Length: 458
Image 1 (cartoon, one colour):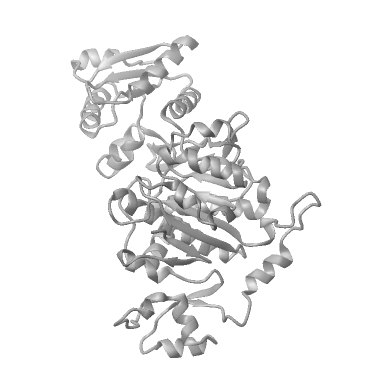
Image 2 (tube, rainbow, N blue to C red):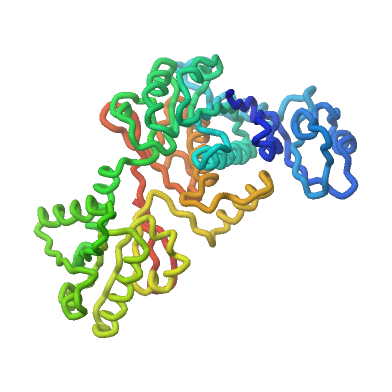
């Protein structure tokens, strides 16, 4: 059965009873924190509502045995007799479309968004996408404060689902933007549907989408491994020009990092740049011979695993003790973000650079605010995962909905057009041939010897 969200009203199965607290109309006025001794009748009266209007915005109130509790957050809608003021303000302040624009200009009305992801509690995919979807809802809430109206609907599209059945829903064809799918096997059907109906599609995670090269309606956030490695290699060679590169074989037969290290070596050979190779099991004197005493060194392991990283730090510590004037930087992998808690001092010591498509700064005030808001809205913490899925949903939805509000059909996700600094996932899209658009943002997370964490954006 489809999950639908009409005018920001989330209709969820009993499985998602915790989510029902977020259900509401598109034109809800505010979120109210329940005080001691407040009642449903009193809150409704104070806000010029009927009890029925308040309960429609908060469907959990209709459940048997429901009790209003101090500290709960509930949604206060606008009275049905009065239109939402932000709708009037938006109509008055929105830029008038040029003559060539159709009468149904999305810059002058609510942006119609569809979410087609596995929204269930059966497995990890479903739970992660529910959290992502909650982030989308939070973005809609934030945009509402800026006068951007959103009409959003959601469908549960699990892995084995026939997405064609979902697309036959009459509401699907009315969307301006569809976020999904999660699974690559569902991309073609959604791509064909988007082409037929002139709908933009944001593919939030799937990296296999051949249709991207021919369908200008598609926007893909994550690059495939080959494209991502090529981008990282190019930025590596820029960042570490004038460095001596040391490749360390870590004897990890399960590693998949060989495609990156081999690609980097071949690019360096083409450029005539020298490098050296050593082994994690080499004796200390042989290990040291791979390093330059004249140039700064940048070390590249061929694994992203933690055990080998720990051994590498031990080898580097011994080398640094015996060669105090040698300069060493360690270049890593996205997985290393998960090891920060245990290796932070070594990350600082060796000026570690980690390439990534995302980064969440746990000390950022923006991160703290969205984590707190998530806890308030959904009465639980975000999943401990990388990336943080609610923040991913927030960043992507905010960027695209704001872009559509500003530019309508002309929005292509180019750098600097939205004026939004993402909390976690940098976004700027470039055209792929004559087809769709690919997010080309990557960043290096740097742990500097001055004990600072900074992001280098490309």
